[in-house]
Image (cartoon, rainbow, N blue to C red; front, side, top):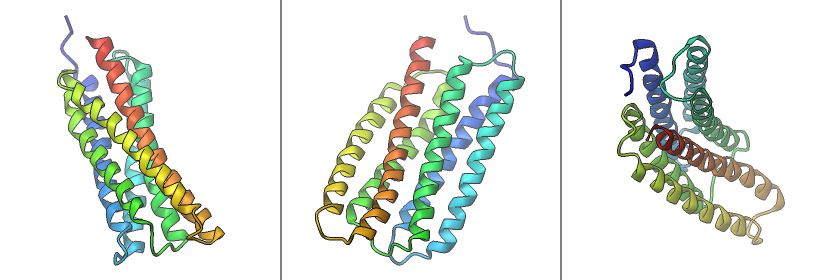
Length: 205
């Protein structure tokens, strides 16, 4: 029988939820950033602030991990989950920053689809975090995240084909490929989060 969580143990769930909710904010900023008529410089600054907030959440989890004798689930899984959430934020912020640095005005429409997948994945991840407390009703979450990651892979491959299809000059191809690589990294990291949560749930069960 599971012992009742102490307040210090319980704080992990709040920190994971805060980290995931921050990803929702970041993904919605990305949607705005890739809009042609957006004020990108202001939005990219907001994205950098999100990345900073994400780092704070990750550091708080790591500090708690170092201070805690008892944890709600395996320490290694807590570390993996926190690190993967942090990776997602880093990838999304990097994509936004590169769009600004390279002054890419028009992105292929498939990039919009890439970002829409990330937005949906972030919403599902944020919705799943409160369920870590009970480890119930999580199956549909990780199944859907895996489906979204497969979809993201297909979009990425089509984007590569488009970039190397002769429509763009070599320098533009290099710039855009860096951006879509970061977005693909974010999609992969969402799957790492889902796989970690599946592993935690299976151990708990």
